[in-house]
Image (cartoon, rainbow, N blue to C red; front, side, top):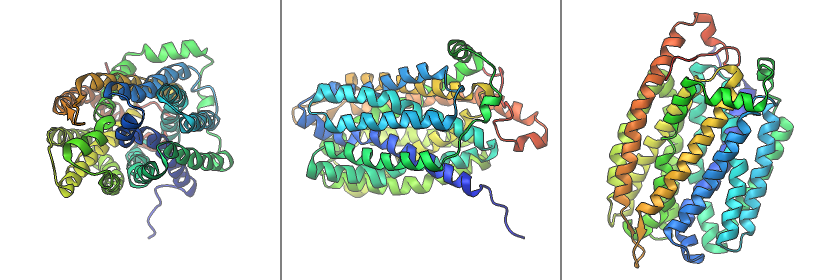
Length: 428
């Protein structure tokens, strides 16, 4: 008997397209981290100023997400995605032209306004098109973009930066993103099923109804902790790697390459496991592993390259497990009529909290005259604290989802999320 296919050909195309979109957006953010050591030297800026470049994107993305939330369920999701992606590409081109710190800061703000909404629209599309029991797998493949940005994007970006200047990294993203945008324009079908379900509410009323719902508020607060660790540690990763761990600029691309390859393997694996053993269990496993590795990583001194690779692989594998499982779990919370708004607000809260985390990190760490990043270990302990808090806060969300899902009739569990609401007001 032939094995039943889990996804249709078009669903495979959608997963691949959303993953590639995420790849360009994540790369645009993540490339800032390895460029940090170059930007601080070339533009003659301090760690606190560099943290502003990182947080400017996050804050503008967060504000944009909040403003877009009221309109997120009123349009074809394809058109909405295309609009914000075009704006993101234009912002990236502005980064490529930026001659100094102030211009780069302004360009990052514009890029964030558009780029920060793309992830939430993508998640809404995933929830519209895929049933709950396969969303872990879908998120696992989409989160491969996080790893692919290291395997392909960051090493190539660093090579380009070392040979042609840091502007060339943004040109690479803009050109590749333009090609992806054209493919989306011609081959992606409209996503309009939610329009038939949505009541006739004004944008502000829709936004207020979303942010004032107790179950949603608890979810937003919980997810605000997910982004804090990355925004705290990653911006200073390249400077810490070169000045504290002792890596050379030539070894840095290889470190990201090795880490990314293993993370690409673990992303889909984490997705399958989260569907099999439970998304919250997978999150707890990833969180405990991440806490242990964060403490080890942030206390490293001069370290052999091979050992630095092992620690980095372990850290990103644990982070991937957390992100895949938490993201899949969150898709079960909003009602079909609130899905776009919920995802937009959730993305906005994560971006704003991430921006605040980056600013806080810039105040905690400092750079010695020799270039050493100081107090990075303190930053690691703060990150462990946020992971602990989020693990506890996610527990009642998971319990409510399991209770609601268990009460559904068997046939309804296979219905795609556009047609059912999994969780109501039972959280928070």
